[in-house]
Length: 151
Image (tube, rainbow, N blue to C red; front, top):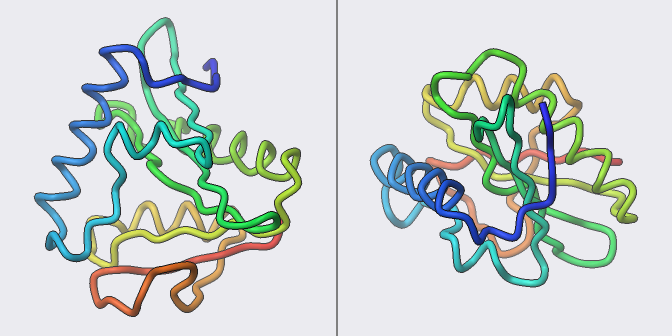
């Protein structure tokens, strides 16, 4: 699997991210949806990675700089046909290492609280993330779960 910084200019990643946003909208009330669209992911405070295997896009993830020490994990997604095949673990391992290399000392995330998101929460737990209160501009929300870990 190859993981690279992606400039989000290709049509395949645009479709992949649109599918992600549409899926999140179908699962989560609009006021609780925090998935970023393509334009939001192109901002300078975000670093975005795509993962490919055999030339096919299989996953993506990003970090958003919150301040000099703290970043937020965003847009983690695995192609549905590749879920539970190790893509998310490899991608998350890469992103955590890159966040450390960039000098961050904390990485936090928001994910859904519904059962659909249980595999994601288990993955984050496996990587040392612990449940926490809302951070940055988030507010308490019964549809959201917040997690963090020191780097």
